[in-house]
Length: 161
Image (spheres, rainbow, N blue to C red):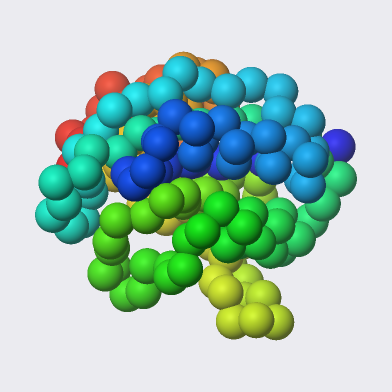
């Protein structure tokens, strides 16, 4: 079993329910959710919106490969009503967003047959307070495979966006 860390976010509809349903679907389709952070209210990142976000992080034990996990998370996003992905840094309001942050200590850059890109660890995770705060809550001693520092060390040394 591999441990995969995911970030979740929503800023439309019943936000708490969106996250709860996403976590339930992750458990049904990807693997056992072994830890889940509190839900954090955060400001939009990378775009302007009147709608605040609700964010969380989860650790999931899975037998799936990283690309299979990506395919499943994208499928869950579609099931929950997400109709478009962010492209080239153009972000917008969304019902649900599930990002793969880390998969064990794997460093990977790949493209799925459908053309979706997967970069592990997530290249922007350490720049995002809304990712790091929940991640530090559930995995403070987890070591970033590229930077060689724990999540706790990383959050104390960066200036969030």
